[in-house]
Amino acid sequence: MVNLPLMRFVPILAVLLALMAKSSAAAGERVGGLRVDCRGERTNAPTVILESGAFGTADDWALVLPDLSRGGRVCAYDRGGVGGSAPRAGGTDVTAIAEELAGLLDRLGETAPVILVGHSNGALYAEAFAALWPERVAGLVYVNGVTSNDNAEPLLLADLARERRLSNLAADAGAIGLASLGAGTVVEAEELPVEAAASKRRALSSPKRLRVARDEDRAIIPGLFTIAALGGSPPSIPTVSIYGGPVPGSPLASAWRRAEAVPSERAVHGWTLEAVGATHVSPLARDRSYVLVAVNWLRSLAPSGHSPDADIGH
Image (cartoon, rainbow, N blue to C red):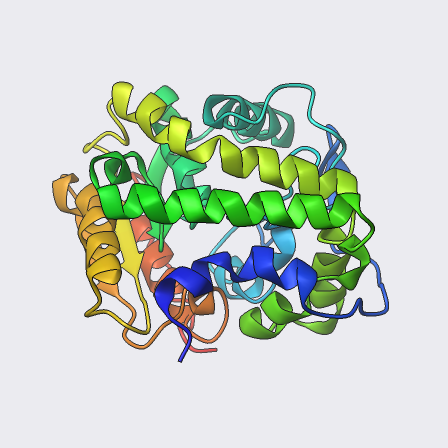
């Protein structure tokens, strides 16, 4: 069985392990230079914004998007310089990425508060946005999330430092011509549809885009302290923490579990969901019903009172 730390690093290790697949068109359109994939109709429910983790793209959400779109509008996007998006004008620190998201929401016409769903390192970007603009956030879902609460856990800081070393390795591999080996392992782990899988492989085959992803990863540990200084995600925002790992009894997994539960436990309206038997990425695929249940709960808490009855099955 693959342990939790390795599963967190699979997207980076995969760059060195598998062959490129035949490419195909990626879903989505360019909005202000950023590739965005929006599904569903606008309703009284808040729009849902999906934020991917390290070395991730909108393709990570290919199975989640149609499920969530049954209850309203949902969008996934590629951060600047990653996947199908144009290079970012600003930096790769967490506040710069939050500012990039704020600009994207403006261009999309999202003036009402949104629900932010962040996977892994993407949770820290969602938390940063919530700390900076709490009035623009109707709810938060952290999926195996990295948040500012990790800065007090030595085991977690060491785990994130290991991830940073592996991200350096991925970028170095790209620099010497190994980027074309692609991302087959992570695609298999996520069980992505064919077109999304091909798009994800392409995103992890570009030396330039690998460097951007590496630089984002380097900024995560400093970002923990930056967002902690801002107070983290406000307890007034309804929050769901989804945690799942194949070895829940290990010291490292237990440390992640404690830290990941903090945002939902301190929220006025909070819910902690344990995805039994899940891996780091399976809540984006076979265990995605946890994400759907979490989002639908937050939709029901929105001021509109909208309570979608979307099918929670696969």
